[in-house]
Image (cartoon, rainbow, N blue to C red; front, side, top):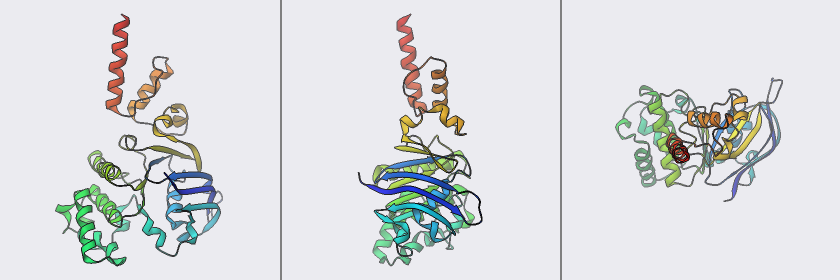
Length: 288
């Protein structure tokens, strides 16, 4: 797979602040990968997302060092609006993205703006409505639906533009567990059926971990850990020291490891953990 995002020795300091929001970032992301980005509040995760999308430095004042290349081109070299067609961002507050009076109008707004013909607009609308299960909401005002529904509308509006890179900035931070699960159900289908490069910034890890090919920990403004998902979560003590609390099944096996009762890779899901416990129990029974 080719590298479509290459960040080298990158730092960004907002104007009128003392310290950089992020610094010394070196990161490469391959096409078609699903990346989870985690870290404490204020670590610089959103600044990193905006830097990939070109909102930084496009919409913010500050001091930049290093390079951020997307598809082999520095973000500042793109014409206004052209990078955003390639890199779509779903914000944590969906209402910040709404511009129309109905959900259907919201979904087609961007498609009309980029000059697609009616047949292509209808094709994309049908696809994204089915993917995100929004059919019953099309005639409703987006401001009057539930939080989980708003987030699905915001996600659908970005997906309809078919960006090659999709960034979700804490898309479930204000959602209940059921709504959170529905958002990740959409992302699971997207991963299975499309070839988007997906970057998800998220605090709730139970739904993210099974989907992510790779995890990146941002701490104190820089990359503290970057590895494939399974190996990433073997660094349990490092994550806990950074204020990151992995899903319960990973913490459980980490505690077994610390007590000398387990030495393998930590299961990433409850199902995997249950299977591993059955294997362990079976081994003990044979020894007896």
